[in-house]
Image (cartoon, rainbow, N blue to C red; front, top):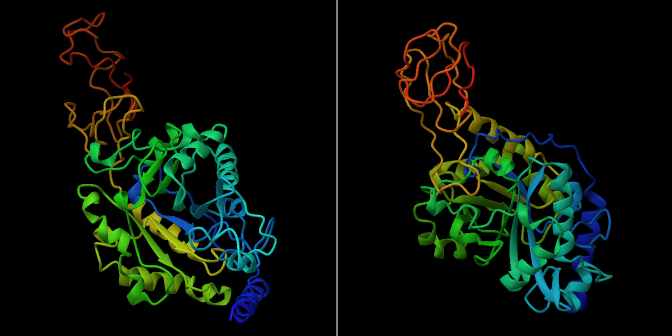
Length: 400
């Protein structure tokens, strides 16, 4: 029986490799940085590490591209299975304790030379260093301890400061909201790691995300939460949960993936799943759309469309939260009324511009007093207290 199974899977792997030539997809368009994390949308890869082409390839895997090539082509969310093997964390695919050795492991990767979790993080860190405003997320199927995850993150030079930890940002402490992409880039908190629990660097996946069922492309089944996501629903109360929508088969098939990953099929998937607001909060498109063979079909077209729609819905500019280390407050999307008539807004954070303003009613005076009532030379006392400057042309900034 094992020999028969081996031949079946070997044939499937060979078929996938022969069929699944790289195809062109729409280029990745970065989301508007005014979007909060839960308003943005990213393409994700299932079993991101199982590339059947490129360096250290698998015989039977779920991706053509290596993690490096996925990053270069706009994939921003990576599903990694990590297993304890030879006293460290390797990326293997299978049941706990069996994924990195034995029959099932050998037919997937005959040389059984597994890449380490550390090597994946090093690839991601190097690429993020070269692309300093990109956001990346990692979703772990985790068969190692949180301590091991933390130790490995610490071992990758320069990576730890990039990780958005719960201490850096807990949506429960920010009115349920997530930071803007701009805040994440400005503070270099651009990598999120979700696993099986909160720790120094890890975040508990289903306490902050919803996730659909998996290993099926029957839309009626996909549009339901997987059990772990359902059981943790109470932990997401009061926050804008991030949603992960899976769409891949139990047995990977590149030809099928090319059909399932088309713009029209994925749009049909979203339209159906959006009716379940427990799976897709508010019925909005998923935060991450996770696929096999991300290079086939054209999922990126839909991801870019969702991000363009989200940016169009922003309306007024989103106020950037205070830098790390400042008192914890929720992002403030609203603005205060201006006392200057047609001036439409006053800044809620230092340096925010006043859009659509009119020339200053104070003529040549370029500054206002720092002490209430202090006179402007040759002028009259200011009624504006601590405001330090007033613009003389539309849109000029009011500095701190």
